[in-house]
Every structure is written in structure tokens, then in C-alpha cells.
Length: 539
RNA sequence: GCGGGCGUAACUCAGUUGGUAGAGUGCUAGCUUCCCAAGCUGGAUGUCGCCGGUUCGAGUCCGGUCGCCCGCUCCA
Image (cartoon, rainbow, N blue to C red; front, side, top):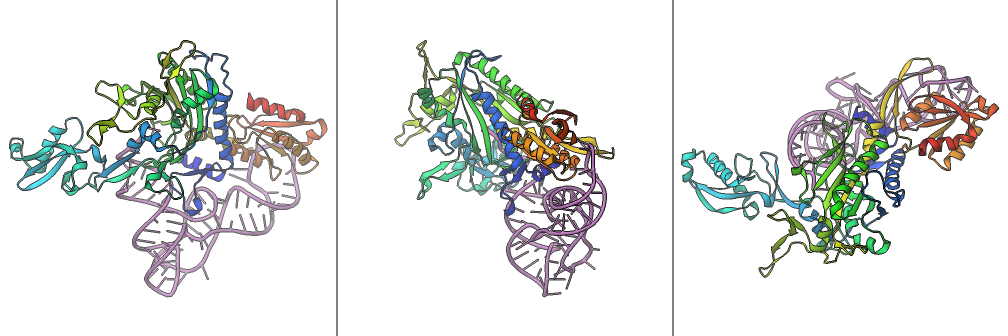
């Protein structure tokens, strides 16, 4: 499938527009048009219904260890800045970076390390990356000074290996992959989170951030939900909402946007059953996509390798889609299902966590004012543990996080739906037909109603059917031009069913109903149209 | 962020050595039409991405900027 054709169709038919287009557009931001908003809403609604409001806590679903409860939440986009410090986003997303003009590589300013080397009056701060930094630094210094290995002792070394951040004059620094000194730019702030100011008179000390993920709103409300709803572990809290990240390179249509919408679940369970719950959610979420029509070879479930896992995770799987804009064999992430252990709740209790030498999580400490070690980012100090009031056991729940991208999902459904096939025109010649084969449940428009010709009372009969359908479904009415043209227009919008009033309708009260994919038509009573569409769309 | 390519109607694209912008499709009005886009007759549409410069005159030349595509980089 040609991505350019899909992009053109999305614009032409009103699925997606570039944000602020009349002003030249804004990179990384997109608007959903009249058809797009219906599609995306249908996807979000299906998710909410299937995961939360339609979940029956009395029945154990297939594959689940036990019954469980699901509730929803809608947290604010701007939260207390400490949330992002404890979650780790602040340190990770607000680094100072330096760029190398020669190699075009970018480094974290404080992570580049090196040592002062001097030879024949030339003093250079030689840097290196990786595990063998001491050895690499020596070799790179030799190379820079054009010395043989046996002449290595002609280099005078000053001080120990230190961070580049402690070097004042970057023009004397040899970048990790450069061949000459002085190629690094001045350190620049690198804000992956959107910064904003709270308060009309606020200054820098009132800085806050637009959330880079919805998940933290759930974690910080964990206790509120427990205290107000009588839910018992295991249970999940779900949330749909906008998140914001300054992506380095927004690209590939809406795939990597700076403003995007997430559908996230944080599922809280007992540590001993967490592995089983992880497997349950991984499989459940995969099935959700296939049930909605993302069923082909382009969709896959991929378990992360051990070394790919985040430091706190004991298991992660991605649901991925082979988007047409990716190279053959490459997949883009639609959803990640992560086993996060007790990392998040502990972070908000104790403070920002890091892995220690033994591989255990502990609060990251820094030197305080009086020389004592203090937490780098202090937690809330609130008790976020859970007490099972049947067993009286108190524990920090483990978390399974199925985190889906609503825009990425929408884009995948658009890609999957796009088809071109051959259909005969009124002369019997084959013509290329563009058809969006959405599953009826997510199709933006469920049905279109046409009078075959604009006379003989057909428009009146058609309008009656349209009015009845409109009460329950997004429906489209069209009486203009040749009926074939009207069918084709609906094909491009992905409307699964077209109802046509013809001469026979006026005699026996039946209409034709046309299937978008098979082009088959059959007759039903016009009084049965609403129920017939309901059966097809709602299953 | 870097390098390369590109930006003309809703879409796909023409537009010569600088001289006031065109086609097809689509859209639209009417007619025709009892079922799958190209039957007939009309109609509308562009600050030529944006800003500035050169010029008597810029879609065309120059600079900047924004956006898109490709390759690096980045992607919790």
C-alpha cells in the first residue's frame, strides 16, 4: 500500500489535517476532520467499553487468573512538578546535550567523560564512551598526537577521568568519535517535556510540565480510588487522554506526534500473581486489535529481550504494526504491555528510584548541603501500600501497564482499511475502486441512505429511513447524481452499508442493502432497516 | 539537529530565456438515469507555502522562514 495515497485520502475526505495548515502547518501536530474524529472516537469508545464499562467483575474472563474490577479516571494534564521528578521523567527528559559538529552525534553533557592529556605543549581533554573508557582515552590520545604505542609514555596526563561537565573550555575537548578537538557545541537544554508556567504572574519557579504520559495521574490517585470505591486488588484503573512530548523528529504522518492521545490501564495485583496477570493482559490486548479487524500479518506481538527491558520491568511486550512507511521487516509500536513491579507506587512513596549494585531498587541519593546524603527527588511520604482486609496482609501492589496509543491505533486501522480493488462501472468496464474496509464497529459512518433517483417519492421514503437510522447511528443521506458515484463515495469513507430506495420500495416496502466489501445487495423491509444495521454493527 | 529532494486549485500535475496561471479528476446547478464514479449542458475555485530582496515587471532569480519526503541522529 502506498502511504502517499492514504495521506491524500485522509486529507481529501476529512480524516486528518495538518494542524494550523493555513499558517503553514506545525510540525508534529495534527487535526482530526469530520470522518477522522468519528473513527478515533469509535476506537476510544470500543476500548473503554471493552476494557472498563463493559467489564463484568462477577465473571472470570478466559485466561484471567481470577475475577477482577475495572474503574476509570480522568486526571489533569498538568500535575505537581514533583510527580515527574519521582517518576524519573524529569531527569531523563531535561538533560543538557552537546552536539558534535564533525560526526553529527549528540551526547548527554554529563555522561561524556574524559581526561586531560598533554603532548608538546598541546593540552586536550580526550573523551571516550563505553566500558573501556580508560583504555580508549589513551588510544585516542595517541592517535590524536600521532604517536606509536611504545611512545605512549610521552603523553602527560593531568588529573583523573572526569565528566565533560567539569570542563570549562569545550574547544579543547576531543569529542568521543571526532578526529580533532573543538567540534562540540555549547551544552544546550534538551526538553523532552513541554514546560509551562502556572499562574498569571508566574515565573521560572512556577514552572510545570504537560504530562508526557497519562499513567502518573493514575499512580498518584491510587490511594484516592482505593479509599473511595471499595475496589479490591486485583483491579485496574483506566484513563484516556492527551499527552505531550517534544519528539526530536516528528515524522511518519501521525505516528510520532508531539501531542498525542493515550489509552492506559494500570492494573494492580498481588506480587505473587503478577506474572500471570501480565500474560493475561498481553494476550487480551492483542486479541482486542485482531477482533477489531487488525488481523493480518502486519500485526504482531513481540516480547522484549531481557536486555531491552526498562530497569524496573520484569517483562514487557509490544503490540506492533508493520506500517507502510516503515522498511520491510520493521514494525512500529501500537501498545506496550509492561510488568512494572512496584516501581511506580514505591517511587511516589519514597522518591525517585534507581537500581543499586545488587540490582535492587533504592532511592537515588545525592550530596546534601551539609555533606549528608539526601534523596535526589523526595517522594510524597504517603503510604501507598495496600491492605487486604480478608487476609490482613499489607503489601505494595505490582502493576501491569497496557499502554496504547490512540492515534497510532487509529493510523494502523486506517492503513489496514485501505484497499484498491476492481469494480465494474455502468458499462461493465472494470474501474479501480478505493475502499476503506473498516470493521463496522469503528467505521465513521455506519450507513448511507439513497433514493435511487430523485423523483417518484423516493427521496421522501429515503428520508424517513434516514431519520430513523440517525437516532442510533452516524448515517449519511445523499440524493445527488448517479447512484454508482454515491456508492463509491461511501466506499472511500468506509461506510459498511448503503440503503437504497427504488421503485419496488413504493410497491412492497422493501429496500436494497448493499455490502461495502462484497458489493452484494439484498432486499429487506424498510421497517427492519434499523434493526438490520444494529445487528451488523453491534454484532 | 545535520545532509539531500520538494512546495502551483480539494486531488494529481503542466507552466519555455522573468511579461498579470492551465489541464485532468473532483466539487457544484440543471437535465438524464431503476443500481456501482468518466451521459448531456452550464458554473465556481488559486494572495503559485509564507516573508523579504533584485527588477519597469517574479510561479520563474536570490536570501530567510515554515512545512512535507528520504537518509543520519533521537525515540522514557
